[in-house]
Length: 85
Image (cartoon, rainbow, N blue to C red; front, top):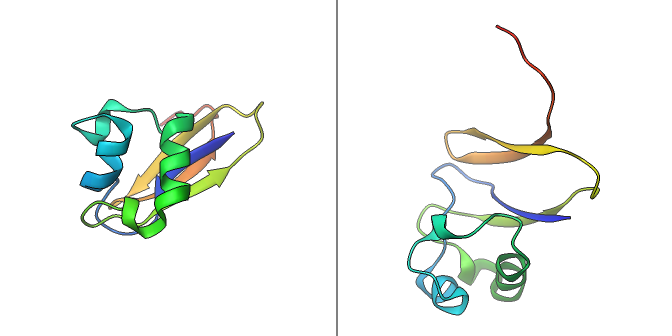
């Protein structure tokens, strides 16, 4: 499975060109693992980045339950597990 994440401080965001290609007005309208999003990010490269974004496609095994963790906009994918505080 391929997932799009942001790899710099700031946060996930798509360029106007990427959103136009996807037929969306806002970047929250599409799932991070949507095959159309993955394709657009792979094709456009840096041109897919919105302001303060550095998008990257990460591939993980299909059978993994995952979540996106965020630290000041820098994202990483983690396998889901249980947490108690």
